[in-house]
Length: 205
Image (cartoon, rainbow, N blue to C red; front, side):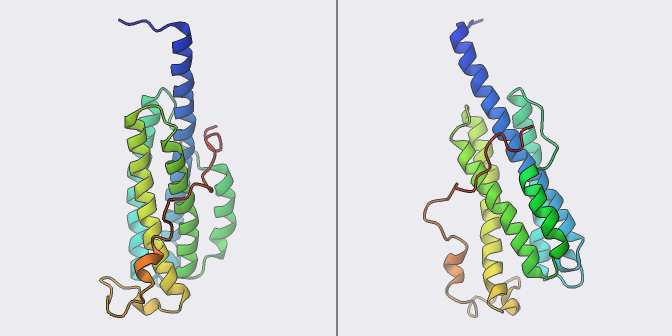
């Protein structure tokens, strides 16, 4: 067995502690997002009689995907020597608590979901570079890519709803009727931003 010098052991421990904090914060955002989507699914505009079918499907799919993300991040956290996070992110939890009672339309559903998917994707992209192993970086980027994909879909739907073209929010879409902007609105950034990323300690407690 190889015994690391005390200085090297300190570096490894510090890297592991950083991994755990980042993973727990990312998990807290996933926990919050999944809980929020479940709440949205219970609203008339999110999963009920006033819900757009495409929006309803996006909400339902997100609940499943975020469950998988939660499991993956929990496994990564325990593998890094930490305790899996089960508590929602405190900073954005208050945002959701204020926003949920105001959700009345499919556009409101999409707007709240976009807020959470954006911060989740940005946080995972920002964290990935600092994680200490390729496996952890791959997990973060996989979960982050899924959040970015949901964000892209939500941006397209949001664009159509905000322009008064809810009739075009259907599956499959009428490609000939879609405005040209739909081709780029889901991917507005040439380089994925990280300015809104939550700091690693935000939800790690």
